[in-house]
Amino acid sequence: MAEIQAEHENRIENPPQQGRNGVDHEKPREESVEKDDAGKEPEKRLTKPFKWTPFKIVLLVVIAVVLIVVGTIYVINANNHAMTDDAYTTGHLHYISSRVTGTVIGVLVDDNQFVKQGQVLVQLDPTRLPGESR
Image 1: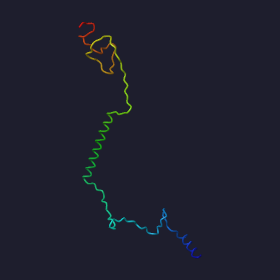
Image 2 (image 1 turned 180 degrees about the vertical axis):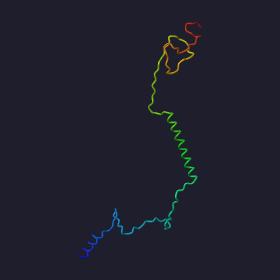
Image 3 (image 1 turned 135 degrees about the vertical axis):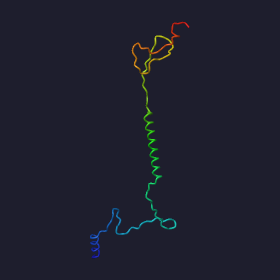
Image 4 (image 1 turned 135 degrees about the horizontal axis):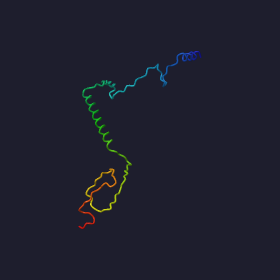
């Protein structure tokens, strides 16, 4: 009974050191090493630090210039061409009915141009005026 009590007191005074997942830190962990087919440990590969060589710098500059040119062309193209799925146009048509029949040889006004009352809008062919015999 004295042995059990002494062991209990020893546990209270010196509790085992455990980590978060309950692993005892007093015991050394066995490291797992992968071995190849021949049973030898693989050689550790040393990675070289990254170095900026002139070729890499030129390549980076060329890629950056290409991306800037492509991006600029895309932005210019997108600004000049409108795209939509539900576009429609509205227009205001003004029909002009003439009191005279004849062949038009010239239009003297442009679209959306303001005109005054009495202003000549079109020129008719004088050789083919209505009411003249042919």
